[in-house]
Length: 416
Ligand SMILES: Nc1nc2c(ncn2[C@@H]2O[C@H](COP(=O)(O)OP(=O)(O)OP(=O)(O)O)[C@@H](O)[C@H]2O)c(=O)[nH]1
Image (cartoon, rainbow, N blue to C red; front, side):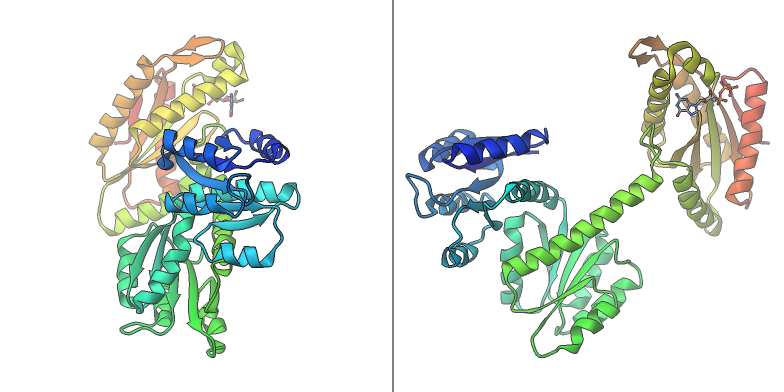
């Protein structure tokens, strides 16, 4: 993560920021105690080296927030961190394209600022689509979003937006007006929700005051949230953050549910979920598919000889090589020392050859352990899908794996 710039003359505040930031090694920052020092740092390092600036409003050589104008002119996302409770000053600052205005009240204020910095870092990867037929309205919303570093896209009506969403599934947030030609915001939401659920794309509906029934209608038909125009920068920002954080929590939960805790690759649950879908697709499109079940030979001996942690390292290294070779397929650790790959698009000969190559790669690979090094071998069973269920295919591959083990291990057995 890029570093951030703190412009602050109070040693106590600097000490608190340093203390809190120390708990998170990904946070790096420079400190300037005055406007002059800030200018020197910015000249020396270049404004592009800073993700954001955290600025105190009252500095000896800049008593009226002059540093804020300077960092904004350099297009650095700027967070005001001040001891000033003055409402007028706050309103004046919020008229500028700053990220946020935070009052130094307690340690939570500082934690909030550091959370904002993490947010800015993540926002750089979040695509936001703003849909409004009025160029002026789009410009206003974009100006509010820009300081938060989102990747911004625009559409003039619902149909344009729908086309963009269909073309680019990585769009995470859609902010749409209601009244638009060609396709209004309401129909846009209904159309999107036929394909994309609330956890994959956040939709925030907008409309002018006076259309009170619209908010409930928007939300009932699939929008995550709703705002009446005109809204403040802070209001929009809070709604977006609230929805994005909810989406990220869900993504973390989904990832945990589908991830193997030792190797970090997908687990059996994921394999069955995705594997069933993929098998169904290949059957309807008449595409050949094979399943390979792989077992590390005599894995128990590794645990016994080098210890359980070394056993874990062997599993991780095997998983890493599996990921390297079978990246374009669905693969997972099934449990113990067993891994599985669904080889979609490959006939039995190609699948067998690929698995044989993988067996050789493993055989020749030296695995470095904390307490030495070792080599391993694998056995594998490969089965071709003949309109089977995933369970049937798995059973056949398992029979072949058993044959490979019984025939002396370090070999690939293929179903006739
Ligand atoms: N280190 C480590 N060991 C594990 C883990 N999960 C299961 N094991 C151990 O893996 C061993 C099971 O290995 P098997 O696949 O039966 O291997 P094996 O019987 O030694 O070898 P083959 O007969 O060739 O299949 C058991 O000793 C388990 O305790 C894990 O997450 N980490």
